[in-house]
Image (tube, rainbow, N blue to C red; front, side, top):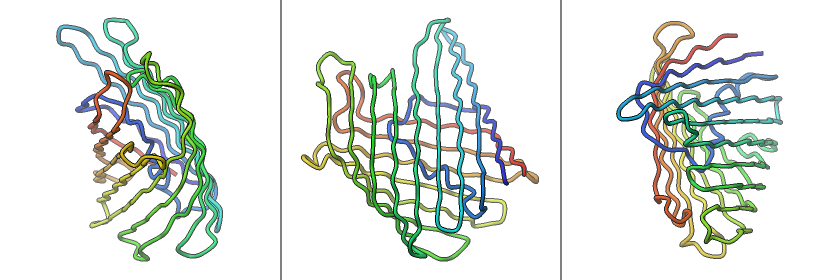
Length: 250
């Protein structure tokens, strides 16, 4: 069993919380059978006219066999300003893959989410579809996902009614390893409302990891999300940039 422990000390962080979870971040150790996982803890302390404290906790677990893969992710994030709770969000995600062809897998997933800063009281997802492996080389990997999902969403803006809709969920993901100590990963999601394609969400998460010494790497990540119809008063686009150190062990 390979267990990855990651502690991120934020060097630079630009607000906000992603609304589309990048499940690809759970696939870091899929070449290893059995149980594996990752946990991270990020702190950011800033002082200008006020004191800001941000704490983010992440847990990733997976179990893999030759044809089956189960992934679980749980993220919790909160921020306090002068001792008052300012932001609070969380996501729990469970996904199952069955590989019935060397390059094709069937996926099913469920997700529960809340995000105070985006006024999302609750967002529940249940989806299924196919995942295609587009390459066979070990130093670069490309994947394409085509899924459909049911969404139940409750927005706390005093205007938006309860939403029960079907959306598409399409993603393109790649991982590149130009050198033995460098890895680059990126995933882009597109999630349109099936009854009206003008209502859509787009998200991208890209990461660069550079191994400094054995089991210790510098890690930087950028996340961008765009929602065509967010809650009233919430901007269409949100982004986050973090850098830190990652430590792994077997």
